[in-house]
Image (cartoon, rainbow, N blue to C red; front, side):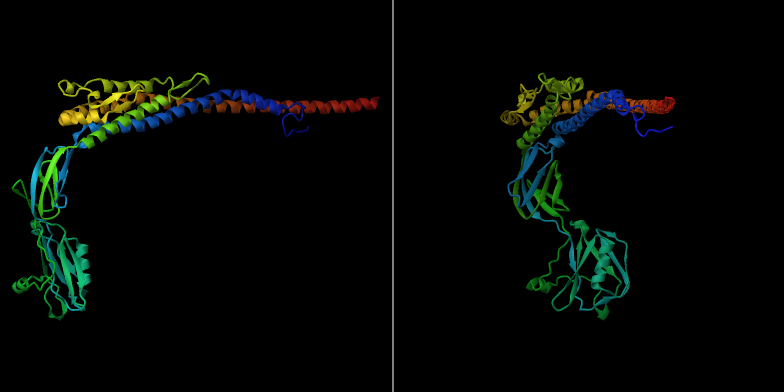
Length: 454
């Protein structure tokens, strides 16, 4: 019996096209499901973008909510080349007269001068830094002065070594403490003997009385000293040039000796910038939802969030946070955001009148900040609720993901069904092809035999 290589050859009927039409009809539900999956994934993508904008709104709300983030206080120095100033949120409003008497310094000492080619025998170098004896450094000799310095630096005892070679080839080691402050001085005891019967490395080159008188020694030594200044006549000190504990919330940095006046006041610029950032973040959320919720009646097409109740619920929740006066503001000077220049427009977006906000700050900065703190808490809490378990955002996103999973499972099942249907029809059409081909062969044989009888 003859075999067929393509459906329809045996019958003369285009069974292959017929099979394609049958399978196409069977795949129609799969096409519908895939279209639905694509539409749902578009919504999921939009909700992903919405999440990032809600996160930004929460961050902006938290800036208003927490005084430490709002940083509505600034400090200004009348001469920043003498004293720099930086205020935290809890700094008290006021002004301070400062007089820098002494800058902090780390100890810097010089070894005696050593002739060119000097080496040191094996021994120990023992540093005492800030009254604490460091682990001795075991020096393996013979070692050059540079090699001794390298071992000191590797030991990290709190002292840094540098070797300077002069024009005549002689060398000195400069030892510098890592920390400034009177409590961070150091000393060195060395058992490593230098060649040539020279003085021990532990003996520093100190100024003699005669060198002090005639000024012949120009080596830039320094003692470990605290920075000292007076604040309104009161003496204060610090191991560094930064004074952060003298006045609560205020960090002062001594730059050079001299006098300056530091003024701490409310910073309207920072407050305005924080409120504007909040308004922009709110508008980003509202715009995303509104711009994707329309319907084109002419084309009869809708945008991804058209009819989406969850996105509408998000806008309504944020609107409630805006219009509901927090309980903490029942006796406040400014009870609403509108009192601070933040109003809702016909478009549903917020707008900031910076002049009105500035006037409110001028009237009472503490009351303005108090109101911003309260509304920052309301919005921040609302965003957390929306995105938390059981919130409108999280519930909708979970529902969309479940829908995609359900439709994908349905498509997978339909694909298996269509595959089985195709196999069944192909087998049936193949059998029909073979049967008709066999009948045609039998018919041809009978025709030939009848022709012989004729």
